[in-house]
Image (cartoon, rainbow, N blue to C red; front, top):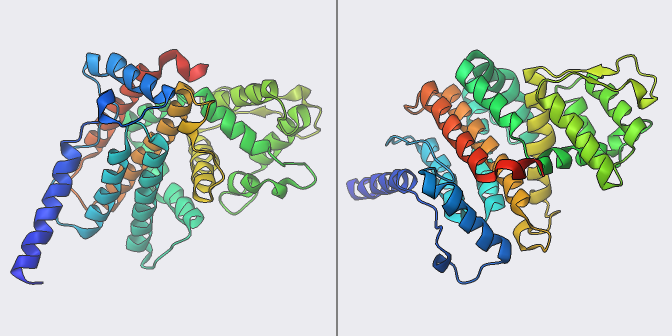
Length: 337
Protein backbone atom coordinates (compact mmCIF):
# COMPACT_ATOMS: atom_id res chain seq x y z
CA UNK A 1 0.00 0.00 0.00
CA UNK A 2 1.43 3.40 -0.98
CA UNK A 3 1.68 6.16 1.60
CA UNK A 4 -1.07 8.13 -0.15
CA UNK A 5 -3.43 5.15 -0.23
CA UNK A 6 -2.68 4.40 3.41
CA UNK A 7 -3.37 8.02 4.38
CA UNK A 8 -6.73 7.94 2.59
CA UNK A 9 -7.61 4.64 4.24
CA UNK A 10 -6.78 5.95 7.70
CA UNK A 11 -8.70 9.16 7.02
CA UNK A 12 -11.84 7.16 6.19
CA UNK A 13 -11.39 5.05 9.28
CA UNK A 14 -11.29 8.22 11.32
CA UNK A 15 -14.38 9.54 9.52
CA UNK A 16 -16.33 6.38 10.23
CA UNK A 17 -15.60 6.54 13.94
CA UNK A 18 -16.44 10.24 14.01
CA UNK A 19 -19.74 9.54 12.23
CA UNK A 20 -20.79 7.04 14.88
CA UNK A 21 -19.62 9.03 17.87
CA UNK A 22 -21.21 12.29 16.73
CA UNK A 23 -24.46 10.80 15.38
CA UNK A 24 -27.78 12.45 16.15
CA UNK A 25 -31.13 11.30 14.73
CA UNK A 26 -33.10 13.58 12.43
CA UNK A 27 -36.09 14.47 14.58
CA UNK A 28 -37.48 17.60 12.96
CA UNK A 29 -40.39 17.19 10.57
CA UNK A 30 -38.86 19.49 7.96
CA UNK A 31 -36.00 17.00 7.53
CA UNK A 32 -38.38 14.85 5.51
CA UNK A 33 -40.15 15.41 2.21
CA UNK A 34 -43.20 13.39 3.22
CA UNK A 35 -44.40 11.80 6.44
CA UNK A 36 -47.08 9.19 6.99
CA UNK A 37 -49.29 9.89 10.04
CA UNK A 38 -47.53 7.34 12.25
CA UNK A 39 -44.13 8.75 11.27
CA UNK A 40 -45.23 12.25 12.21
CA UNK A 41 -46.52 10.96 15.55
CA UNK A 42 -43.35 8.96 16.23
CA UNK A 43 -41.06 11.94 15.65
CA UNK A 44 -43.22 14.06 17.94
CA UNK A 45 -43.15 11.42 20.66
CA UNK A 46 -39.36 11.08 20.50
CA UNK A 47 -38.97 14.82 20.95
CA UNK A 48 -41.43 14.93 23.85
CA UNK A 49 -40.40 11.77 25.71
CA UNK A 50 -36.66 11.67 25.07
CA UNK A 51 -35.15 14.90 23.80
CA UNK A 52 -36.89 16.98 26.47
CA UNK A 53 -35.49 14.60 29.11
CA UNK A 54 -31.93 14.55 27.74
CA UNK A 55 -32.34 10.95 26.56
CA UNK A 56 -31.48 9.52 23.15
CA UNK A 57 -33.45 7.27 20.84
CA UNK A 58 -30.34 5.14 20.52
CA UNK A 59 -26.95 5.61 22.14
CA UNK A 60 -24.13 3.78 20.35
CA UNK A 61 -21.05 2.94 22.33
CA UNK A 62 -18.33 5.54 22.06
CA UNK A 63 -16.08 3.53 19.81
CA UNK A 64 -12.31 4.10 19.96
CA UNK A 65 -10.18 4.79 16.92
CA UNK A 66 -8.69 1.48 15.82
CA UNK A 67 -7.12 0.29 12.56
CA UNK A 68 -8.52 -3.25 12.67
CA UNK A 69 -10.15 -4.06 9.31
CA UNK A 70 -12.90 -6.28 10.72
CA UNK A 71 -13.81 -3.60 13.22
CA UNK A 72 -14.36 -1.11 10.39
CA UNK A 73 -16.43 -3.54 8.37
CA UNK A 74 -18.76 -3.75 11.36
CA UNK A 75 -18.71 0.04 11.83
CA UNK A 76 -19.83 0.44 8.21
CA UNK A 77 -22.93 -1.67 8.97
CA UNK A 78 -23.61 0.34 12.11
CA UNK A 79 -23.46 3.59 10.13
CA UNK A 80 -26.06 2.17 7.73
CA UNK A 81 -28.31 1.52 10.74
CA UNK A 82 -27.80 5.04 12.04
CA UNK A 83 -28.56 6.56 8.65
CA UNK A 84 -32.08 5.09 8.53
CA UNK A 85 -33.04 5.97 12.11
CA UNK A 86 -35.45 6.92 13.51
CA UNK A 87 -38.20 6.24 10.98
CA UNK A 88 -37.00 2.98 9.44
CA UNK A 89 -36.36 0.91 12.52
CA UNK A 90 -36.84 -2.31 10.53
CA UNK A 91 -34.00 -1.40 8.17
CA UNK A 92 -31.84 -0.50 11.17
CA UNK A 93 -32.44 -4.05 12.35
CA UNK A 94 -31.46 -5.46 8.95
CA UNK A 95 -28.10 -3.68 8.96
CA UNK A 96 -27.51 -4.50 12.61
CA UNK A 97 -28.17 -8.17 11.89
CA UNK A 98 -25.62 -8.08 9.06
CA UNK A 99 -23.07 -6.66 11.48
CA UNK A 100 -23.91 -9.31 14.05
CA UNK A 101 -23.66 -12.13 11.52
CA UNK A 102 -20.32 -10.76 10.31
CA UNK A 103 -18.92 -10.67 13.84
CA UNK A 104 -20.30 -14.12 14.68
CA UNK A 105 -18.45 -15.41 11.64
CA UNK A 106 -15.23 -13.75 12.76
CA UNK A 107 -15.55 -15.18 16.26
CA UNK A 108 -16.10 -18.64 14.80
CA UNK A 109 -13.12 -18.28 12.45
CA UNK A 110 -10.88 -16.96 15.21
CA UNK A 111 -11.54 -19.80 17.62
CA UNK A 112 -12.26 -22.71 15.26
CA UNK A 113 -9.66 -21.92 12.62
CA UNK A 114 -12.15 -22.22 9.75
CA UNK A 115 -14.92 -20.26 8.07
CA UNK A 116 -18.63 -20.76 8.61
CA UNK A 117 -21.30 -18.96 6.59
CA UNK A 118 -24.38 -20.78 7.88
CA UNK A 119 -26.26 -18.41 10.18
CA UNK A 120 -27.91 -21.21 12.17
CA UNK A 121 -24.53 -22.79 12.91
CA UNK A 122 -23.07 -19.41 13.87
CA UNK A 123 -25.92 -18.77 16.29
CA UNK A 124 -25.52 -22.23 17.80
CA UNK A 125 -21.78 -21.70 18.29
CA UNK A 126 -22.21 -18.17 19.67
CA UNK A 127 -24.81 -19.21 22.23
CA UNK A 128 -22.83 -22.20 23.41
CA UNK A 129 -19.41 -20.59 23.57
CA UNK A 130 -19.77 -17.02 24.71
CA UNK A 131 -23.15 -15.27 24.67
CA UNK A 132 -24.51 -17.15 27.64
CA UNK A 133 -21.18 -17.13 29.48
CA UNK A 134 -20.72 -13.37 29.17
CA UNK A 135 -24.32 -12.67 30.21
CA UNK A 136 -24.45 -15.09 33.12
CA UNK A 137 -21.00 -14.27 34.51
CA UNK A 138 -21.48 -10.50 34.69
CA UNK A 139 -24.24 -9.47 37.08
CA UNK A 140 -24.78 -6.04 35.51
CA UNK A 141 -25.19 -7.45 32.01
CA UNK A 142 -27.41 -10.23 33.34
CA UNK A 143 -29.58 -7.65 35.12
CA UNK A 144 -29.83 -5.60 31.93
CA UNK A 145 -30.90 -8.63 29.89
CA UNK A 146 -33.54 -9.53 32.46
CA UNK A 147 -34.77 -5.92 32.56
CA UNK A 148 -35.02 -5.89 28.78
CA UNK A 149 -36.99 -9.14 28.78
CA UNK A 150 -39.48 -7.45 31.12
CA UNK A 151 -39.90 -4.70 28.51
CA UNK A 152 -40.65 -7.06 25.62
CA UNK A 153 -43.52 -5.43 23.68
CA UNK A 154 -46.81 -7.30 23.40
CA UNK A 155 -46.40 -7.25 19.62
CA UNK A 156 -43.09 -9.11 20.01
CA UNK A 157 -44.27 -11.89 22.29
CA UNK A 158 -47.50 -12.31 20.32
CA UNK A 159 -45.42 -12.48 17.13
CA UNK A 160 -43.29 -15.20 18.74
CA UNK A 161 -46.34 -17.12 19.98
CA UNK A 162 -47.93 -17.02 16.54
CA UNK A 163 -44.77 -18.29 14.84
CA UNK A 164 -44.37 -21.07 17.42
CA UNK A 165 -47.75 -22.61 16.58
CA UNK A 166 -48.24 -21.63 12.95
CA UNK A 167 -48.77 -24.84 10.87
CA UNK A 168 -47.74 -26.86 13.91
CA UNK A 169 -49.33 -30.23 14.70
CA UNK A 170 -48.42 -32.91 17.20
CA UNK A 171 -48.24 -35.57 14.49
CA UNK A 172 -46.08 -33.43 12.20
CA UNK A 173 -44.36 -30.72 14.26
CA UNK A 174 -41.72 -30.05 11.61
CA UNK A 175 -44.41 -28.61 9.35
CA UNK A 176 -43.68 -25.51 11.40
CA UNK A 177 -40.23 -24.26 10.28
CA UNK A 178 -39.62 -22.78 13.71
CA UNK A 179 -39.95 -26.14 15.46
CA UNK A 180 -36.47 -27.38 14.57
CA UNK A 181 -34.87 -24.08 15.58
CA UNK A 182 -36.42 -23.91 19.04
CA UNK A 183 -37.07 -27.56 19.98
CA UNK A 184 -33.84 -28.89 18.44
CA UNK A 185 -31.65 -25.79 18.65
CA UNK A 186 -28.65 -27.72 19.97
CA UNK A 187 -29.05 -30.71 17.67
CA UNK A 188 -31.01 -32.90 20.09
CA UNK A 189 -34.69 -32.79 20.92
CA UNK A 190 -35.48 -30.43 23.79
CA UNK A 191 -38.14 -32.42 25.64
CA UNK A 192 -39.35 -29.42 27.63
CA UNK A 193 -39.97 -27.25 24.56
CA UNK A 194 -41.43 -30.18 22.65
CA UNK A 195 -43.91 -30.80 25.47
CA UNK A 196 -44.65 -27.09 25.81
CA UNK A 197 -45.57 -26.85 22.13
CA UNK A 198 -47.77 -29.94 22.44
CA UNK A 199 -49.56 -28.50 25.46
CA UNK A 200 -50.05 -25.08 23.90
CA UNK A 201 -51.29 -26.59 20.64
CA UNK A 202 -53.70 -28.94 22.43
CA UNK A 203 -55.28 -26.03 24.27
CA UNK A 204 -55.05 -23.21 21.72
CA UNK A 205 -54.52 -24.83 18.30
CA UNK A 206 -52.80 -22.81 15.58
CA UNK A 207 -53.84 -19.46 17.06
CA UNK A 208 -56.44 -18.58 14.46
CA UNK A 209 -57.95 -15.76 16.52
CA UNK A 210 -56.59 -12.74 18.29
CA UNK A 211 -57.74 -13.74 21.77
CA UNK A 212 -55.82 -17.03 21.74
CA UNK A 213 -52.76 -15.32 20.29
CA UNK A 214 -52.81 -12.82 23.16
CA UNK A 215 -53.20 -15.61 25.74
CA UNK A 216 -50.30 -17.67 24.39
CA UNK A 217 -48.25 -14.51 23.97
CA UNK A 218 -48.71 -13.75 27.66
CA UNK A 219 -47.67 -17.31 28.54
CA UNK A 220 -44.49 -16.90 26.48
CA UNK A 221 -43.83 -13.52 28.12
CA UNK A 222 -44.22 -15.01 31.60
CA UNK A 223 -41.85 -17.86 30.78
CA UNK A 224 -39.26 -15.38 29.51
CA UNK A 225 -39.58 -13.51 32.78
CA UNK A 226 -39.05 -16.38 35.17
CA UNK A 227 -42.60 -17.40 36.06
CA UNK A 228 -43.72 -20.98 36.56
CA UNK A 229 -46.51 -21.82 34.12
CA UNK A 230 -48.90 -24.70 34.78
CA UNK A 231 -50.72 -26.10 31.74
CA UNK A 232 -52.35 -29.10 33.40
CA UNK A 233 -55.71 -28.32 31.81
CA UNK A 234 -54.23 -28.52 28.30
CA UNK A 235 -55.74 -32.03 27.86
CA UNK A 236 -52.48 -33.29 26.39
CA UNK A 237 -51.11 -36.32 28.23
CA UNK A 238 -47.47 -35.26 28.42
CA UNK A 239 -45.52 -36.04 31.55
CA UNK A 240 -44.50 -32.43 32.22
CA UNK A 241 -47.19 -29.76 32.37
CA UNK A 242 -45.43 -27.19 34.55
CA UNK A 243 -42.82 -25.06 32.83
CA UNK A 244 -40.01 -22.79 33.94
CA UNK A 245 -37.25 -21.30 31.77
CA UNK A 246 -33.75 -20.68 33.06
CA UNK A 247 -31.64 -17.88 31.60
CA UNK A 248 -30.07 -20.06 28.92
CA UNK A 249 -33.48 -21.24 27.72
CA UNK A 250 -34.73 -17.67 27.62
CA UNK A 251 -31.81 -16.58 25.45
CA UNK A 252 -32.32 -19.60 23.18
CA UNK A 253 -35.96 -18.72 22.59
CA UNK A 254 -35.34 -15.02 22.05
CA UNK A 255 -32.49 -15.60 19.60
CA UNK A 256 -33.84 -18.58 17.65
CA UNK A 257 -37.55 -17.94 18.00
CA UNK A 258 -37.81 -14.18 17.82
CA UNK A 259 -34.73 -12.50 16.34
CA UNK A 260 -33.75 -15.10 13.75
CA UNK A 261 -37.35 -15.64 12.65
CA UNK A 262 -37.78 -11.91 12.07
CA UNK A 263 -34.51 -11.85 10.14
CA UNK A 264 -35.60 -14.74 7.92
CA UNK A 265 -38.99 -13.25 7.12
CA UNK A 266 -37.42 -9.94 6.18
CA UNK A 267 -34.63 -11.60 4.19
CA UNK A 268 -37.12 -13.61 2.13
CA UNK A 269 -39.48 -10.68 1.60
CA UNK A 270 -42.35 -12.20 3.55
CA UNK A 271 -43.37 -8.97 5.24
CA UNK A 272 -45.31 -5.84 4.30
CA UNK A 273 -43.36 -2.62 4.76
CA UNK A 274 -44.48 -2.09 8.37
CA UNK A 275 -44.53 1.68 8.60
CA UNK A 276 -46.43 2.22 5.36
CA UNK A 277 -49.36 0.08 6.48
CA UNK A 278 -52.68 1.52 7.63
CA UNK A 279 -52.26 -0.70 10.71
CA UNK A 280 -48.93 0.84 11.71
CA UNK A 281 -48.82 2.06 15.29
CA UNK A 282 -46.38 2.91 18.03
CA UNK A 283 -46.30 -0.81 18.82
CA UNK A 284 -44.98 -1.44 15.30
CA UNK A 285 -41.98 0.74 16.10
CA UNK A 286 -41.47 -0.83 19.52
CA UNK A 287 -41.30 -4.34 18.02
CA UNK A 288 -38.69 -3.41 15.41
CA UNK A 289 -36.66 -1.33 17.86
CA UNK A 290 -36.72 -4.12 20.44
CA UNK A 291 -35.17 -6.51 17.94
CA UNK A 292 -32.71 -3.89 16.72
CA UNK A 293 -31.52 -3.35 20.30
CA UNK A 294 -31.16 -7.09 20.89
CA UNK A 295 -28.89 -7.48 17.87
CA UNK A 296 -26.84 -4.49 18.98
CA UNK A 297 -26.41 -5.90 22.49
CA UNK A 298 -25.31 -9.26 21.06
CA UNK A 299 -22.82 -7.55 18.74
CA UNK A 300 -21.14 -5.87 21.69
CA UNK A 301 -21.07 -9.11 23.68
CA UNK A 302 -19.44 -10.76 20.65
CA UNK A 303 -16.88 -7.95 20.52
CA UNK A 304 -15.93 -8.71 24.11
CA UNK A 305 -15.34 -12.32 23.14
CA UNK A 306 -13.22 -11.47 20.09
CA UNK A 307 -11.37 -8.80 22.08
CA UNK A 308 -10.06 -6.98 19.01
CA UNK A 309 -10.87 -3.44 20.16
CA UNK A 310 -10.48 -1.56 23.40
CA UNK A 311 -13.94 -1.67 24.99
CA UNK A 312 -14.66 -2.93 28.49
CA UNK A 313 -17.43 -5.07 29.86
CA UNK A 314 -18.42 -2.12 32.06
CA UNK A 315 -18.85 0.10 28.99
CA UNK A 316 -21.03 -2.54 27.34
CA UNK A 317 -23.11 -2.94 30.49
CA UNK A 318 -23.60 0.80 30.97
CA UNK A 319 -24.52 1.22 27.31
CA UNK A 320 -27.18 -1.49 27.60
CA UNK A 321 -28.66 0.24 30.66
CA UNK A 322 -28.75 3.61 28.89
CA UNK A 323 -30.56 2.25 25.84
CA UNK A 324 -32.99 0.21 27.93
CA UNK A 325 -33.90 3.30 29.96
CA UNK A 326 -34.63 5.27 26.77
CA UNK A 327 -36.66 2.41 25.30
CA UNK A 328 -38.82 2.24 28.43
CA UNK A 329 -39.29 6.01 28.53
CA UNK A 330 -40.21 6.24 24.85
CA UNK A 331 -42.88 3.54 24.75
CA UNK A 332 -44.11 3.32 28.34
CA UNK A 333 -47.55 1.73 28.68
CA UNK A 334 -47.73 1.19 24.91
CA UNK A 335 -45.40 -1.80 25.31
CA UNK A 336 -48.24 -3.87 26.75
CA UNK A 337 -51.17 -2.61 24.68
